[in-house]
Length: 432
Image 1 (cartoon, rainbow, N blue to C red):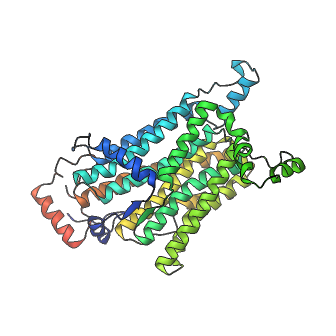
Image 2: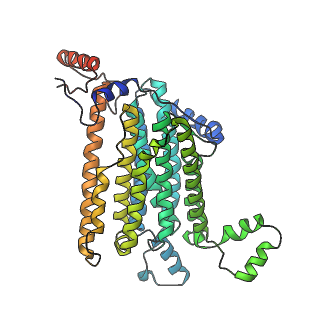
Image 3: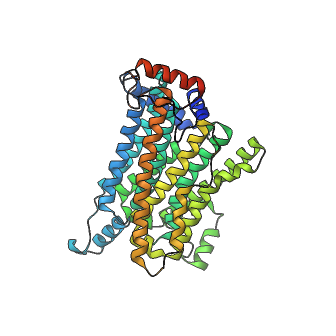
């Protein structure tokens, strides 16, 4: 029987079948190192392995790394406190020991994820199984992984919840850069990764940060090594000494602050470049409306923490999980609308409950926490159902399995006629 899809419209179904990805990675590191490496491994994988299996396997590495670091650093700053306690000679009962190997594992997990992320697309082209569904799944995993990486880096650098602007810089810059790339693709219909880009050099730098924490300790990021040994050489002769003599250590920037500042600069550059590209391409300012979800998420998150900082200080992981779910919802919907040629609705209902934080009494900590927990669980359930339904509809539209590229998409003769009619009419179909 013919039915209309819940997330995919009849016209969207036709667009999905005819969708062609247009993109390129201009990074020399990708061209001469990462791409050949991915080709090397892909050639040794059986042709019956589905690209989505490779994508999932890569994500599993990052999830395991996140859980491992979460176990030792539930509030992000335990690694720093552990090393400081050891340096001060505190007894073992006064602190929770955080082993450095978790940062080694995290760095390796990121590089493995990056390699597998490059492999899935090559495996899809090699087996002739490229599809819009694979692109959406790969993109959704990247969006989810974006938050996992930012959280693990906060632990690796010892960024405590009380370091508010550093937490904001790492989190907002991470998913802001990612969203801007999706936004550009939505309006220009192509994704061109620049000479230096986050999926390539950004992941490598993130892995190097974790490796540094493994070798030098988390306390390294609370020193001023980068400022003392690099920045001063960029200043004209004598200027650095004059500033140091007059102001002392006021301008000394900790290594983790330096990383956060660089992240914000990269984010600002990305925003400027994407805005100029999209406005020039569309010749209209109406495209700016689709940036509202990102601006809303950043603004509301900032105001909630500012009005009730204890909510974030006492529940940093729950706040992170909520932000992750909200970001994944607004970003993946943007890509889905791009592939189905549907208009993106910038007024996301998923963000609406966040306004309740401003109406709950500030001094009622329990109510604030309960709402945060309910909101997070509700978003988790909603996103699980949405992901399942979206991919179920896509499988039916394109007549492919999610994790299997060998077995034909089974359908009875009645279903074949149903699907045939549905394709000709542009309907999303459900066949039984």
